[in-house]
Length: 179
Image 1 (cartoon, rainbow, N blue to C red):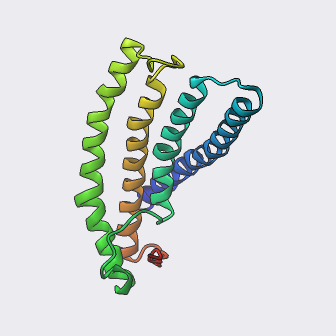
Image 2 (image 1 turned 180 degrees about the vertical axis):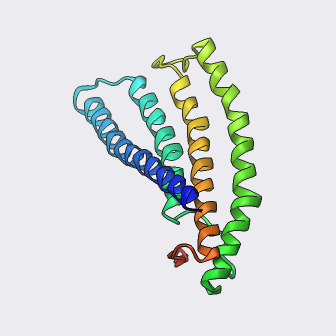
């Protein structure tokens, strides 16, 4: 189990790096958006390429940040009873959810998104009409993001099993979002 926990820690570190990249992209997207708006309103200068750059960054924000969100236990849940469960029961619910729902979905999405990216790369597809930026960098975020969530799912499975075996302590606290 020690080797598996080391693997989980390595995945967590990788996820943290991409989480920081996603956070930096949020700031960069804000700067690009504000700069584009200021240049348009102050100097009547604008380019649709700046709008395209923003959706490229948004793809990175969402897809690179998803694994970090899972790692931080901040992902969306359908919480009807989960908040009232005990720590071990929560770990079992999480483990079953990861195995039955998350992992099959991520593998399927990864398998579906890879050709979508490859076709865009091979054809050197551009966004028409304006801007003309290549589309493949944004499409690359799909398989990369799904791959990162798959890896983080493996890490979470390892940690839940280790917790249930009594090998590690784990914070199972979950705060239901305010409605």
